[in-house]
Length: 386
Ligand SMILES: Cc1cc2nc3c(=O)[nH]c(=O)nc-3n(C[C@H](O)[C@H](O)[C@H](O)COP(=O)(O)OP(=O)(O)OC[C@H]3O[C@@H](n4cnc5c(N)ncnc54)[C@H](O)[C@@H]3O)c2cc1C
Image (cartoon, rainbow, N blue to C red):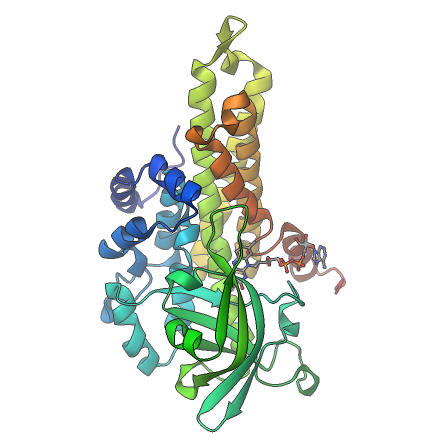
């Protein structure tokens, strides 16, 4: 079964060739061992895929979010999980679009060569959750440094990244006109921070996703690590969040195709009551329905990507793409596990692993409810509920 044809066949072929060296069995073993796919991420970096969004002048390939999304989609479609490395893609845009020339020259060539990884973004906090503008982590300017205190939760890939983009409040909420003002973003040198005020506590979780609690106790960040203007960080972080939602939509689409391919192959072969189970319409319809929804989500994903690449507002499309794709991949996952019968629960089929992995995207990086609320308020103009 194939998805729509598009003009990214070279990228698809390249990623498929690389992923063929890291089959589903590789990712299964990584999942079982709860380890990190170092060799896979190294291979992606060596071949330049992790530098897709870095402009050519800084050593990258200067591609857009559309191409980056195809890379992520293909990884998931091949049975892998882009969650191990997608941070580098969406964080890159924040640095490329809002970083100073000095910051770009200092970091981008090293990220492109693989010397440095920019895989982490620290936004979520335990006491404020999705209510991002109320975060309590503060960064207070003292001379040529900012001093950071507070706590973050669910911050991913910190143990496998050199750099992190951190959101903190630089002006107290009580002193700003709009709650989205007074927030700033910083580039944090993770190794340095772990020696001087940042504690990292891993969170064991349902998927093999390296994610952590972070505690900041007077962590000092040099002022030159502020990205963009002080107080405008929320606007900058939204660029990264829109890119993240769109890329994750593409990953869900990759998952969706993986599930529908896997289950159609299985139900064609599996015979019960003297005929293939795929001959029953009760089996066919949920698979067909999931496939239709994946194809539809794919259109919204390309729309969000093209708006993003044109520098146009894309909040609604990025959110809707993520909503549709996460829902479609989840329906495909349910059909896939259901029609594998008992075998869907056996690790060697990879279905239960992919089922767990794709379930995450109903909650993170933004929950389905919050997307519905965004569309109701910002697209349909209904009264604000919070
Ligand atoms: C594996 C994993 C990796 C993550 N990685 C990162 C990361 O790298 N960086 C980072 O910053 N964050 C990360 N996150 C955090 C993620 O973005 C949040 O978990 C997500 O945004 C939901 O926030 P919350 O968990 O605080 O849920 P809450 O805000 O507490 O919400 C809980 C649930 O309540 C519902 N809800 C809340 N408010 C409303 C409302 N007003 N109306 C209707 N329903 C509502 C939603 O259904 C939501 O799912 C990660 C999370 C996970 C699980």
